[in-house]
Structure formats: structure tokens, C-alpha cells
Image 1 (cartoon, rainbow, N blue to C red):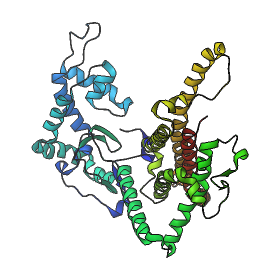
Image 2: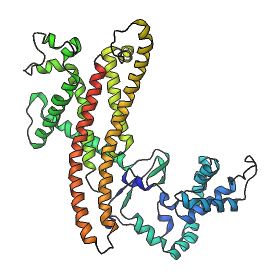
Image 3: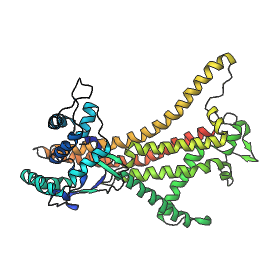
Image 4: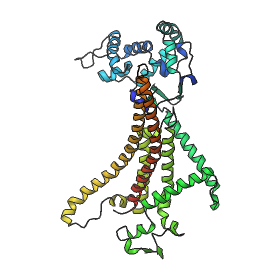
Length: 430
């Protein structure tokens, strides 16, 4: 089975209350394949089929002699309970370093799971005897499984092969479509310089102007900064006939470069914010609690930095610009400058990696605390002192939920701010 921690991460199903989505299968062949292949009876049969072709090698024979199929299956039975009841192919690979070809695994699984006569005969008899039919229906109830036309699942939390569609993938696609829809309508509403009308339009405009005026422009700088540099900017306050720090009607003309980057920052901000807010909806979860998502966002920031810096300095000049300007003697510079350049380039990659980990850690931490507090109520549900713990758990979960609402906005802001700073640093000379 999957690691229990995966239950607070991504999954290949949407979970709703059991009463809202019940299963009432009457025979084993009706159950989904991903569930069937974890049944002990079916795993045993699959192990027998695989052991005939791939038995366990005998030690000290260099893999030239093998145990019988019966002994191989018996050894797998001894190993399995302490290893999350992994199937025979995982046992053979992890315990003996023997990899069963994917085709052989698929053929064995197909042969076992498509034998409806055996499933609804011998397996059904075993299930009815042990009461597993009702138990499996109970455990599956509340789980809306996502169809997997392009891949195969190992279990409900882990992919085995191919391209598997997860819950967070669908949430991210929905978030992206929602953002495109909302801002397409907003863009049409204000086209031609028309003022924003309506509560939603004014709310969107407020956030857009905040990201542009408080994040993008201060972090990337005015156009004058790219001509004079920050150090001597005060000595050249007048640029193109006006004060470059002024915020008069001509101010947007002085932020051409910053404004070109602003749409990227808008997209990052609203995508992260919407994903974070989805995490507050019961039974959905936050995609930003998965490293793959935060790493993808950090990669987008890095790619924007790389492209922006290369446009400003040239493809080669961007990498050379990572070295700070230093007035050193040539004998010292030959030693010091290459070392500093390597450190600066490493830092460029490290800070974007940390950007991904930072968002991930903040989102997962909130989920972990909330899970722990609610777990207190579940742990003492049958105890006499539940009346004292339950109110505290509910109150604590409510407070943590409100804190997560604040963190949803805060982390979107912080990630966008750091992205703007990294992009601005790539565009400027050190």
C-alpha cells in the first residue's frame, strides 16, 4: 500500500462523504482493476503466474539456480507484510535485484484480472466467506475514481506506468480555465480604456494594479535604472526631461521593461492564489502542496529570468553578468573571479529551488497542523473525555483554517515578489 503521508498529498480520486457516492458491487469482476490487484487472493494468484516465469534465485549461485515457484511464492508471503504488502514483482526487485519485464507483469495481471469465471467463482467464494465484499464496498464508497486512459495505477495514490491523471492535475486545469475565462471577460469589459464596473471587475483591477505598482515596478525598476544603474541613479535624477521617480501621468512610459514582465507575474500570482484557495474547499486539496507544482512555478520564474536576462545582456552576456564587477589585480582575478562565477551560477539555481521548497513547506505545514488537530477528535471519539477534546479540536481547526486563508494570499504575494526580484536581478548588471 502507499505511504500514509500520501493521503494529504495528490491522489487519483476525488473524495467526498461516503453517503454521497456509494458503491454496491455484487461480484469481484465489477470492481476497478486498481482495487482488485491489491486483494490478497488475487495477488497470490498473480504471484504464482509470475513465479513460474521468474522464480527467486538461490543465493551463492550467481543467479544460475532458482527456487521452485511454490517456494518463491512462500518467500514473498514472508516478505510482504513488512513491506506494505507489495506485490511479487516489487519483492523480486527489492529483495533480489531481479526486474520482471513490464510486458510479463502486464500479461500476468491481464490473465488473472480478465478471468471472470475465476474472479466470480473462487474469489467471490473467498470474499463472501470473509465478508470482504461489503468491506471493500465500504472502503471504496466516497472515492470518485479518475479514469486513466493513458496509464496504469499502482494504487490510488501512486502511478505505475504511462501518464496518469491525478486530482491536482484536474484542479490545475480547472484553475487555469477559470483564470482565462475571468480575465478574458475582464479584458473585454475594460477594452478601449473603459472603467471597470461591478464588484468582481473592481476586485480584479485592484489586485492587478497592486501586483504591477507594488511588486513588478519596484522590483524591476524604471527604464532609467537600466541606463544609469542604481548606484549613480541619484546623480542622474532627470532622465528624458523628467524625474524618473515621479508618479505623474507619464510614469507608465518609464516602466516599459517592468510592464512587459508584469503579465507573467499576474499569472503566477493568480494561479498560486486560486490553487491555495481551492485547498480550503473540503475534499479537494491544494495543488501547491505538491513539489511538482511548486517546482514547475519556480521553473517558470527561472525561464523568465533567463529569457529576460538574455534579451538585456545577450545569451553569453547574461552568464558573464553573473560575476559582480570587481577591480582586482590580474593575478588575483584569475583565481578569485572563476570561483565567484561558479558560486553565483550555483546560487542562481539554488535560489529558484528554494523558491519552490518555500511555497511547498508553507502549504504542507498548514495541512499537517490541521490534520493533527482534527485527528485529536478522532483519536478520543470513543473515550469518555471526548466532550473536552472535541470542542478544542473544532475551535483549533477553525482558527488554523482562518490562518490558512491568510497564508493563501500571503504565499501568493511572497512567491510573486521573490519572482519579480529574481527576474529584476537577471535583467540588471551586478
